[in-house]
Image (cartoon, rainbow, N blue to C red; front, side):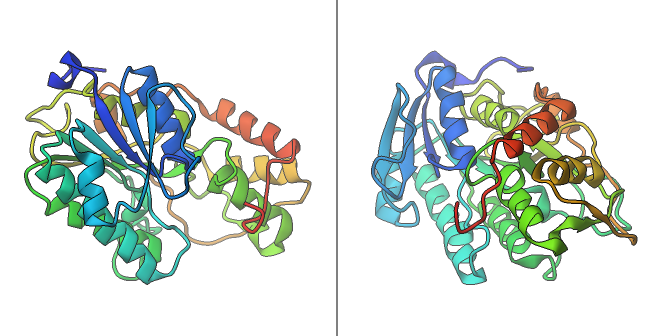
Length: 318
């Protein structure tokens, strides 16, 4: 990455990862192991953490203050990947907003150096009239949907947890294979099975990042490969809460939709009307030394091949 490592490089980083058996969490654990970290993999069901050297499974609910305090004790960083997307509003608030804040306060009280939170670009207002979106752009209002609003509120709650360096990583659509992948598995299944899901605006922006590039960034920040900085364009500001967007090269909805419909054997339907056509600006992440390795052609080829091999599963099946 772009700057020298923080003090965590002088000893083995100990990183807590919530949702360690999930789509993003499992890959983050692997990226951390590659960087020599010791990982405490937080899961709810025994035997579901990644079976990797250096990964210790910790079963429990991070929403429980006692468990949170125990699991972060002696850690150097925490990576939070859990948000119950698709659950009712109350569940998203309880786990996402309140639970993540509970873990953050426990980490702060334990002297953990960094908390790296997987937020989302869905916290931004991306109405048709809005252009490019950077970290200073307006956030969604109360009409932004349960997911966008509760993720926005989680970010705000973490902003109030002083005394620890917090990094809010905001990816858009996350591509990559996995049974619980929204964009590689669940959304394609809907396109295959539901005629209404085959209709989209072709010129709308499809902002995306590959899961491996996201995991690499999370691991680099958590292990101190990205040093603290006084300027947020250079790195996380020590003791502050710094948002950072993560997005790969530009794409349009047509690119994604044509790949999916072709692979699952249905015809796309194109709609007309206003749509957001801006970019998720990721200059800050690149200033921290991040360079995505997976390009659009590679990501779509992987997506299409996986779907032709039967990778699209319904939400019930997943």
